[in-house]
Image 1 (cartoon, rainbow, N blue to C red):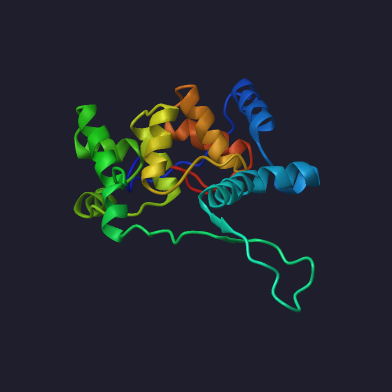
Image 2 (cartoon, rainbow, N blue to C red):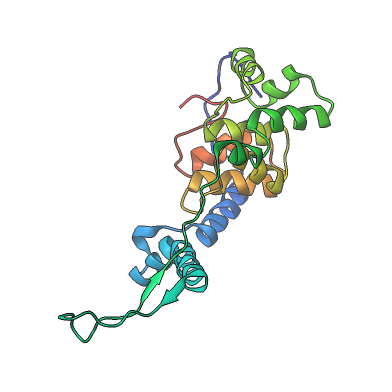
Length: 215
């Protein structure tokens, strides 16, 4: 396997059986909004938002101080009672910061330490170079790309749960609408951590972003 600034290989077609299993996994888990039925698409996109809005409405109704007013002169018979919602206090930035979780940088460095690896072992296995890793180590607020998070997840041989947490620390999540994400998730679930092997799967399934290979 080639890492860092060494000359990169061109991906080739991997084992057909492996590609077949990955393709089946994608077909089972992929969510394409454009090809789903409208009702299903709407459900996928807005269910969580609708649930949150409904909870807010219920909370407002529960906490509202409801009182009745007599219909003022000249108002229509449809005049209704008025519900007054008590003013809600917004949390300060300090309170929000106190509830922040572990940063991407802190979580990544902790995972490296837990494995007893050196920095060089970690970034080379992730297909990254010393310059990038120095930026991460020297900046507690470093914001990686999603691709970089995936690279370190594979390089550090993380479980899916560990990867979910690492993604979340950088503000990301696995997307069921991304074939790339599903391929990486399949690799993690089946302990396929070799970057070149993953790149070959990506190549065979028509993806254009790779970890250690040239396009």
